[in-house]
Image 1: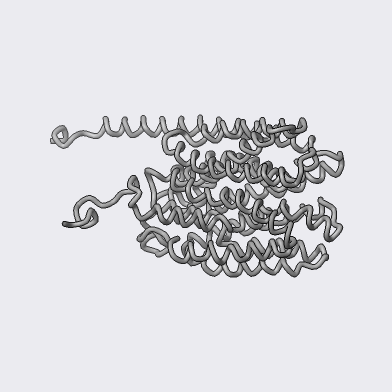
Image 2: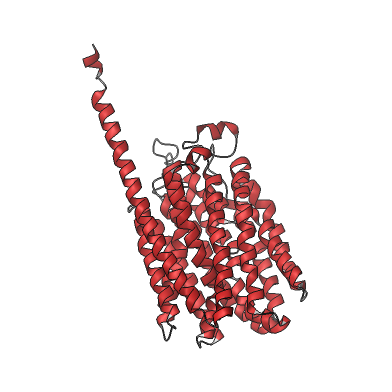
Length: 433
């Protein structure tokens, strides 16, 4: 009996037997221990141990998060170019051992601030090919109808890493010290992420970086896309999202400890955040295949605004877990939404470059937010003022999402009228005779 592939009914992306689903799952596994979790989301775990060991201030230590953000801002457009030019797989494979080595060398970190800061430039720079863009570019080549869900599965890896690493690292640091914590992360990169990429993560055939394949990709060129109003709105939305998300994740544990929580309970809240990042990615990916992505994101952003207000008033009791869940949902949703919107608005022709540029803008906001929050705390002795600024930023972000949704609806309606008019005006073959 012939297989479905031998008959006239090939397996489509609506079936779990479709070849793209293992790619999405492998991307999820690899992203668990990529630079987004190792160099960004795990940094908060090391703040208090470094503070105790080296005698540095919290502001000095947390400055690393701004350095990482601005390093990523500078390298993201280059990552987009490299991925579009050479293909994601060829960029990722050499970066994995380089990134793991850089993380592992933190074991030997001396109490010298400039060495500490230089290390946090080197770590994301050597992991340039491992930020989500590469994985999402690969996954996007495999899917159309289930693009949102596939991207959500891949991006869930960051949430899984955000849930697993705080618990794992807090246990390792408590028993073996923070230096062993960095070695642990380096080993996870090589034992988990590297095999996943090597064995499964690859572009769909005929969609790679060859000249023939690139010529067949649909969509706007980079220059036209960046001059469009939807792209300008996307840039504004993501600079505001960057302002709040990285700063709140990095400072969530110190913020909660200042509010009276034990380090263990604060780590549990951080893991709750990571779990809801996973849930946010999966649910958002599923929903945006059927509901307008800007509307979905707008609802989640309003939830984040409420969380910032609650944190600003002094979180007590189990409400901290609700706040962590609301913030995790936003972080879980943002790059699912971005990936889908970029492909739907602008196609795959310049996907890597456009994603890299928006990610750079996001990191611009992340660096500003990560620097502003501890500086305001140092000036006022509390996090309240910074959290109120974040609440206002999320409200503005919700407004921009509403404008984007309205704009794209008008554009779609206008295009539909033009197509209908053209179809009505074109004579049929019978009329032309």
